[in-house]
Length: 288
Image (cartoon, rainbow, N blue to C red; front, side, top):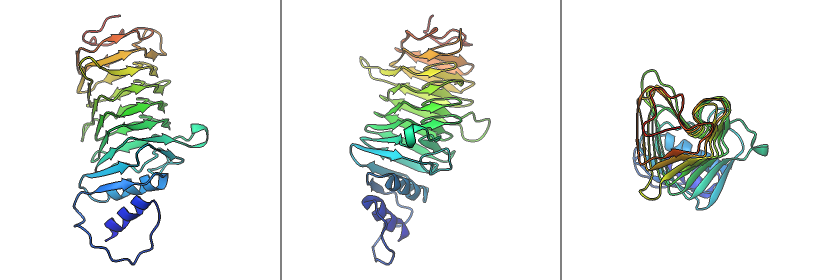
């Protein structure tokens, strides 16, 4: 009863007094939740989806900008921490809408048991956090398909997305397909767009003739991507270009420290102060 009652609240974006009698499906059954265009409705939808271990789909209001004014998953997260499989379907934008965008919270954190999937034009923007993962901090699994991370900032690693360093337990995995990353920033850390940390797995894929672009991101090291002691980083049909590293002599495009890395039809060009210099082992198919 409480689960469907909450679904109605999310759909309408209002609070409904208890006492109505509504027939419901079993609590463990996955559901699709239409989410009204408001901060409170989105927070309620994520909370509802987290309430059972089954996968749930949140259908965001088409064209809506969900302006997040404060943290709802602890002070550092705009959304409640994702602890179950949740898919968000756009097109829609979730953004830091605090005063002047200075609120210190990322858009989402995915816990070890969580899965976050963004499809059909979902954009996470202007996350701004003291720590890792300005847009998304991932300790579980993240999948982006036809979605974007833009204009996010972290003081630590991963301006757009960080696969958290994970010495044991669940190893974070991120899969990006046709999902460009641009304008993300970390001043001191690794990975302006993406940081793939200890034991993490990162797979980035574009389309032949129309590559996925990772561009105009900035970091202390690895303006585009940093993979540090990660299990695997795979780039296919991905162009890493026009990114910048602040530390002199370090990789502006892709930085690698250990781990397995594969690049296929993925040009790494026009990054400053260089493309991949300083990586050990070297980044495959990267010069300069």
